[in-house]
Length: 314
Image (tube, rainbow, N blue to C red; front, side, top):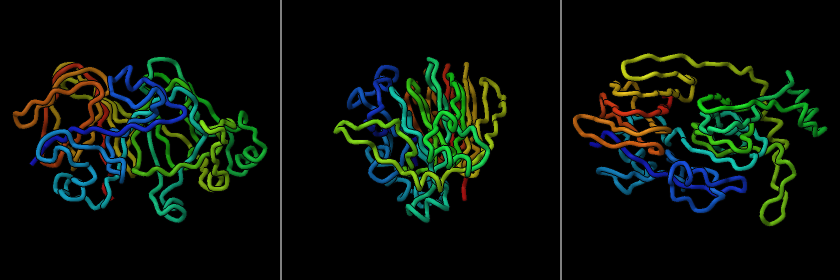
């Protein structure tokens, strides 16, 4: 049974999208308005395709359902996480996502807690949380459209990490390039969109009442911890009820034991190779792959940075 699954995702064009996925990763993008690459996805209609081995050509969604042993026979019936790269050539809308309870009640969906790893070399910023300390204050400023008094803008640089819990008002701003790891949900409530119009001249839909319901006043905690091992520098970026995320900067050769039923791997810098049970596979910036439950340990050689994630079993 396959111990590693290399994945090819799907692109999504957006009015705020750009060309960095082509310029920096050499992907064949559909246009210079490409905003997202859904790299590791099991979502219906948007699933990644498997590029190697016994399941080559099949969708990750299909294999997750048909071969649960590859994933440690999980309780989750649907692939629980989504990993994407976001290229924002313009500001995204100010938005908020529902939590699980609200998502189930109103949308027949999971909520959407996510996290961002900043990839852009250039200076940029995000909207991350609010300047006020109560939901009543927030709703009053929303009704008065006093966005500058409400929204907290934070500068970003490459390597920064943000945990965006459901209920956090947030937005990715112009010139950002971000690796996003999230619950597998596409429920977004748009709170404000700068009064922009789409390519047909229409104002984009807002979801003000649902946004007001979803908003939470959240104390943002820095969960980052340093990890140390032979051949790499690492950081534990987040460990929460939905997923765990780690950063590994490998400078020569590093050996790892699989500590979770399966692992989602995103190569964001450099090149090298991964060896599992004597089989060697080249890996490079822009590659995404999944280490299955059949791999006990593995060795990575080269100079590269990898973001590793795993779902937390319910």
